Length: 256
Length: 335
Image (cartoon, helix red, strand yellow):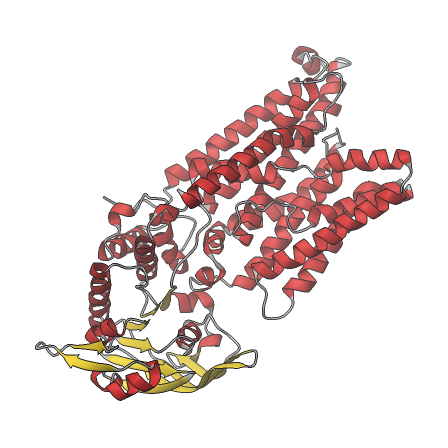
C-alpha cells in the first residue's frame, strides 16, 4: 500500500493564460500536505491534474510511477479520490445514495455488496453524517453537503485523498474535526493533499505546506518555514506574523 | 442504524409492480374503443371482432407501448446526460430532424421508399442526419462534454424548426394539412412487421442504457464526479446520446412527435422511487409504455367516433404537470 505523486516540469495554459509553470514536486505519505496560495495561483489546476481530471498539461505527472493519463479510469478511481468544492445535484438522490456512489469503482454487479455498505457506514460515521442518510441531498445545508461529499470520497477507500477547498462551508467545529480526520487518515498511511484558503488551519494541522503564486511553487516545507512573514507579505500582500502557541502549533496574525 | 443501498427486494418490487401495470394495460386497453369488442367472438375467430381486435387494436396498443416506453426511457437518459430534469428526448433535435424529413416527404409527394412509407423513411433519414451532425460538432476532439452536446443539439434543433416552417410555407393547402396532422403526433394501427423492426432497433438501445444504470447515477451528478469515480465520460456521453436517439428516432418516424411522455414519466417516478437510475430506467420504460397506451385509449373514446391524436392527450395532461413542476422548482429554490 503506497501512494506517490511525482511531478516533473508540470505546466498548464488556459488559452494564452499560463496558470502553472514547470512545477516539480514529489508528494508521498505520511505528511498531511496543504496547498495554499492567493486566487489564481494554480492550486485547483494542480490538484485537478493530480486527480487525473485535467488533461492537456505539459510535463509529467506520475502516480505510483505511471503517467496519470495512462491509468485506466476505474483502476485510478480505486486508488485516488477527489473531493470537489461542492456538488450541485438536480435530482432527488438521498445522502446515502451519494455516499454509496463512492463505491462505484469497486462495484462488482448491479447491487452494493456488504463490503460497500460497510465502507459507506464507516465514512458516514467518520464525518458525522449518519443521521442525514435518508435526507434528500438538495435539502441539506452547504456544510452538510460538503461532509456528504467528503464521506463519498472516503467510502471510495482511497490511498490518496485530494481535497479542493473542503471547508468553505463548514462551521468551525467541523473544520477542526475535518483536519483531525485528515490527520487520522494520514496516520493510517493515506496520502492526503488539501487545497485551502485557510492559512491558520494549514499552519496548525498541516505538516507540509506547498505555496503557489502565479503558477510557481514559491515555498515547500513545514508551516513554520513556508509561512515566514516576509513571504506572506510578498505572496498575499498582507502584513502578517507567525505566532507559536505553547503546544508548538502555529497561527498567523494578520495586521491591518 | 445501517446503510441499505439498493436492496434486491426494493429493486425487484419496483420493477415487478411497473411490469404488472404494463401487463394490465396491455391486456385491457385493446378492449377500449369506439366499437365494442366481444372477447368470446375474438377467441372464436369471428368477424368483425377478431379482425378489429387483432389487426387494429392490438398492433395499435403495442405501438403505443413501444413508443411510450422508448420516449420515457430516452427522456430519463437525456435528463441524466444533460443534468437537467426538464430535458426531453427532443431537446437535442432528434424529433425536429425526423419532422423535417417527414415534412419534406409529404411536401414532395413521395409515396414509398422500398418497403417503407416514404414519410417514415425520410423521417428516419432526417433524424439520422441530425444525430450525425450533433455528434460531428460535439463529439470530435478532446473537449466533448454534455454542454457541447446541448449547444450543438439546440443549434441544429432550431435550424430544423426553421426549415420545417420554410417547407410548410412552400406547401400547398392539402399538404400543409398533412404536415400539421403529422406534427401533432398520433398512434395508428401498423402491421406486425413494422412492430418487429421497431423492436429490433429499440431493444438493444434500451438494453445498453439500462445496463449502465450505475454510470448514469454518477453522470447525473456531474462529469467530473463520474470521471473521479472511474467512468470514462466521453464514451458514456456518446453511447448515451446515440442510444437515446435510436430509441427516439424510429418511433418518432412512425408516430410523429409525441410530447411530454419523456418528461412526465421519469419525473413522476423520481418522486416516487428516487433518482437511482438502476431502477428509474427500467421502470420509466415500463410505465412510459403503460402511460402512452392509456392516453391513446382515452383518445379513442373521448370524442368517439372521432379519434383524437394522442399528442393532444399527453400535452393536455402534460402541460399542467409541467407548470406544476416549474412552480415546485421555484419553491424549492427560494423557500
